[in-house]
Length: 316
Image (cartoon, rainbow, N blue to C red; front, side, top):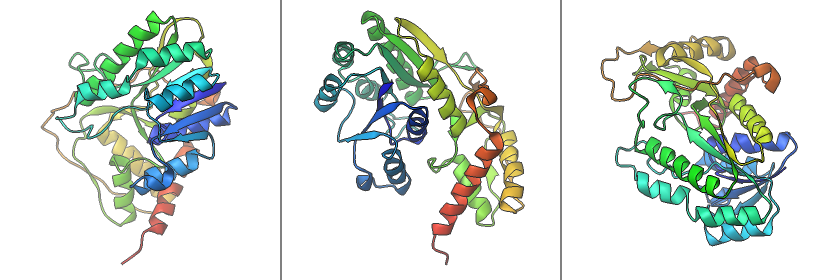
């Protein structure tokens, strides 16, 4: 397939591009900047590496004039709209309405141009933190203003794709982790252990769905390849380790001890405050064998990534 992909500089986008290319597809990926123009080192590396697996297009954003020109100039089989406005996404003041406007900019014109170019399939990335997605507690509310923006974005896409008689697939992401991730919880665990410290988990009672990004990427590629061209809507909610954050922290420690040859001690705090929904998970368990995914190798790759990263850090 000839695939037009947005959001290629993101952690998951970086992995999705590589997996689509490995499956034999021709991927054209949109990047707002060139690799050297990104400020943070991890994103710079992601863009540089991803560009080896795709035809990169720089200085372009979803729905703008250059994007519409690109769409009209190509012959596309699939649009993968993975990009989303995530500026300050953890903040309670996140601009959900502004994010929806950016995520769906000129959507009717984009879809008309895609149809004219022969494209009948759209693949949108969603989040388990959207209201009504996955499974969990408290009636599945929008997890945050960011979750609300993703839910509204999906609503807008469903409406306009239906109006245009296009096939829309939605790939719902839980909590991915792995090489080239943002400095979030698993990065904190790895870096603390490798520095000889004992990390803590402050919210061990939350039940979440953490998934190796390499497994997620294989599930994404399979879903993209199987997305029907006939008008309609399909969804998949791939799941990983469904367990409390405390249990996941202990799982990480167990996997890393023999690989790092370190004690990998952890401190699980007593959690009494629950500002977020206590349970939020996905529901579809990927078939690792069918996808050709090896769990032990994924843990090995995670270890190698952080060992190589640690080797680059100047020691005092």
